[in-house]
Length: 312
Image 1 (tube, rainbow, N blue to C red):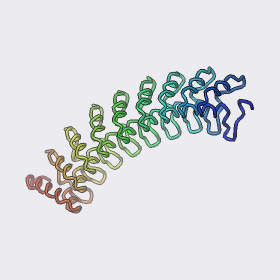
Image 2: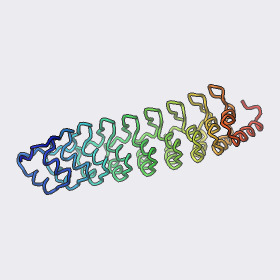
Image 3: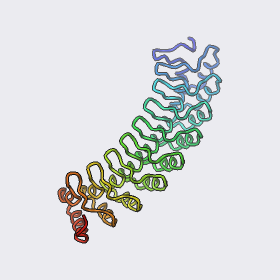
Image 4: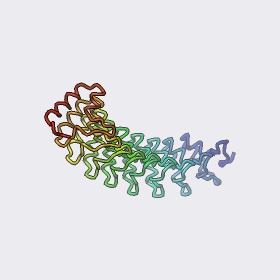
């Protein structure tokens, strides 16, 4: 059988041997005169793509030793060998591929995901570090949903990766996804105190950014009763505790409706908090607390009202 003959998936013997990690067979096949190491299968994948995706570092070395091997051929979904290696968290394979100047670490698949994006999604810190060490890496490329690697790191609550990414000056911590959510809002919504702290250490982070519904990080933290995050955000004087969302509701309104006594207390300690702001339907924080039957919050709001009877 010729080395170029393929099966129904158009995978050559070299493709199968590479994917299965049969180094000795790969070496024999590469020694044939008529061998083309770049032939793709029905899905557009090369032998190097299969070897990379399965972490076959010895086979990858053999293939990269060929001068005629193209290390950056994308498959039908736009996934290159380094993309597959990053997706598979194959540290050694990623390292081998990134040593090649003709490998583009920023190539995206059809869903907009880069190798860095995939490595962050799988919390592969060693692979992330290798990619960030490339001078030509673009760390803010977002997927089809507008999610950057930093956003993904906050979603998975991977603090080590959040710190790694924020260590790059060219990482923009304010890039919002397709729904207007920033990494800070995402971390606040999840109650991830540590990620919020890391983000707040960046001087360029925008504290009052809001999503498509007008919800700010403070409102998100108050809504879900994440007292630690509420306290962190309120520690910044330039945070506006009275900012309303598209329904006219304030962070205090959301905390009151949820019966989150701790968040309500923290908000009421701010002298600039207005506890009587009605939403677009006329509901004040006190109305929401009473409507939802949260006795403790009603007491807190009534005490504030008694102390400040003239506040509107």
